[in-house]
Amino acid sequence: MPGWWTRCGRWYAENMPRAHVLVVTRRSTRKNRYIEYVGESHLENLMQARLLPVLIPVAPGTLSCLPEYIRGMGGLLLVEGEDVEPAHYRARRANFKYLEKTDPLKDQIEIRLLRQALRRRLPILGICRGSQILNVVCGGTLYGDVQKEKKSRLKHINYEHYDSYRHRVTIVAGSPLHKWYGRRELRVNSYHHQGVRDLAPRFRPMAFAPDQLVEGYYDPKADFLVGLQFHPERMPEESAAARRIWQAFASAVRRSAGG
Image 1 (cartoon, rainbow, N blue to C red):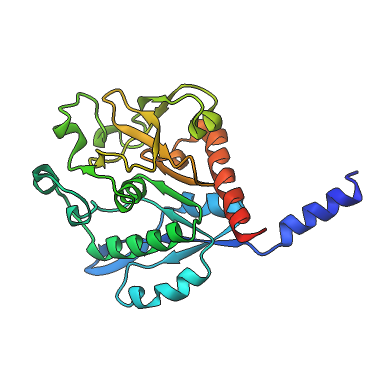
Image 2 (cartoon, rainbow, N blue to C red):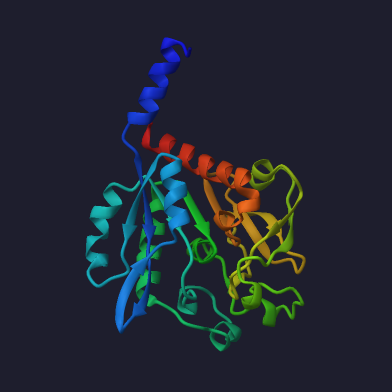
């Protein structure tokens, strides 16, 4: 049987208050009305890592409520959504030429949350669009359309094989991604047309696609400040490595909260 100290540690871990991680929703229309949603896999991973997801709606009135949300923020998770508005970075003509649907309110909410989280040095994980807007807030830029601007033969989104499509990435040796996946090559999913053009100065790349698009990056001076262009939560064949990402994020959140 487990020793007394082990049982006490387990009880404390299972009963201690969960640190709050803010997650901004995405909004869409259903029967001419807005609905708010977040992929369940994001929420499930946070809860399995013993974190408490707090959903921030993209709705009128949210901006005035942000100070209250921010007071309890222990970490920030930013995920998928519409294109990031080119007004928020040093845009080129292509950023406007290839611009698709946007949500200016979602941009405003996420930018304000990011600035507060960065100022307080809280753990941040950006996935897909989340990695793009994190890079923008830190001074980076984006492609308006990766495939068209780079004239790449590599598909970055494949509607005919939406969930099964994979492409190869090369992982930088010694990076956190190398530690989490334990190898130098990986096949990842891809659901985007915007992407990182200029990486913000504070970040270092962790992975590249064959056309040299940055597929992952991190801040080596931060406890946990990570952007991933692909969706680890949608790659069941790599679930063990994905758990290591969420566990690393959760550990950083708890350290930040003093737990």
